[in-house]
Amino acid sequence: MQSAPPARASLVRARCRAAAPLLAAAATGLLALPGAAQVTTGIDQLVACRFEPVRGRRIGLITNSTGIDRQGVPTPVRLGEAPELELVCLFSPEHGLAAALEGAVASGRDAATGLPIHSLYGDTQRPTPETLAGLDTLVFDIQDVGARFYTYVTTMHYAMEAAAAHALRFVVLDRPNPINGLTVEGPVLAPGRESFVGALAGVPVRHGMTAGELALMYRGEKRLDLDLEVVRLAGWRRSMWFDQTGLPWVNPSPNMRNLHQALLYPGVGLLETTNLSVGRGTDSPFERIGAPWLDPLDLAERVNALAPAGLRCYPFWFTPAASKYSGERCGGLSFVITDRDVFRPVSFGIALAALLRERSAGQWDFAAIERLYGRGEIVQQLADAVPADTIAAAWEEGLQEFRLRRAPYLLYE
Image (cartoon, rainbow, N blue to C red; front, side, top):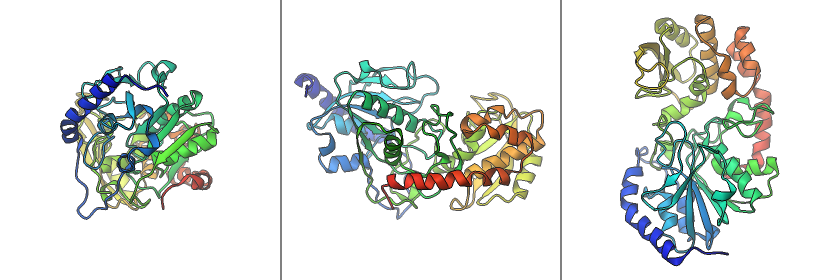
């Protein structure tokens, strides 16, 4: 196995040690609930076993600012200062290494560690042969949010394919599903509709799996010849919400700022390919929707009349400072989750879509909703005024099949 020049390796380790306190302070986010469990993530477990799964390896790390240990120390620092391995480069997903950018992400160099950063959300969404040169291992450490169309898991899948093609080892440092690992919901992705917002057919919008479990499923169903290892969580149970783990919250993307938004996202996020604002450019993205042509009083009354389990909404006016309808006053709804255990965001999103189609005919353009929904029939169903509960009932067969398919890949009880 080829090793890096000792001088360069020592320089990277020195820079990582110097950067550790500052990066740890910057990365630590919101505190967990009092009395929460003490879950340890894959990076914590990797440190505890003295890096045994990657010892002696030349590593490319796919990560962003969510890749931290329980002390808030970033994974690039932990790997970069470890003498047992050689951290060669970093790969950044959508939103960049700091998880703060919108749009294409440029490659560059990490100021803290001095390592090159290869973008996986710019000219390419996959590691190239040039960026994999000299590596024998890829490590993935990013916090997912539990929705099929959140792109970090697709980045992982594409990197797994590249690793298989180049005979590299692939290691996932696992993290919790923040909106629990029990509940699955929504339509499954139709075959032939695979894309960057859904890489594996048959997976529902809310899948209830961790990144490590999805990696095992992807390897199995795609029959990848891949040396894959998942460094498991310790202390995590499928029933847990993120604020019950004792882990710090770090925004995984600029508009995913708390657990409430993560839970609303699988439903409200479905609507953002249409001509609705979902609160981007405000202080509460995904906790509201709106448009200049929407009547908030009428819509709030009708949504609340449906009595969606675990949620209330309120009429609301807001003016986004960026993104869709920037600078325009929008009428809309503000959402409050009253019982997260019974709230079903995808079912709510479709119920909201049906009401928008009924109350805003000719103004709400819903043709693009199928991209994140993952099935073509939704546009015709909305156009034909098919009741929302009828649409949702049709998901059940696909969900039952998915539960059976995912069972062999689950790592936690």
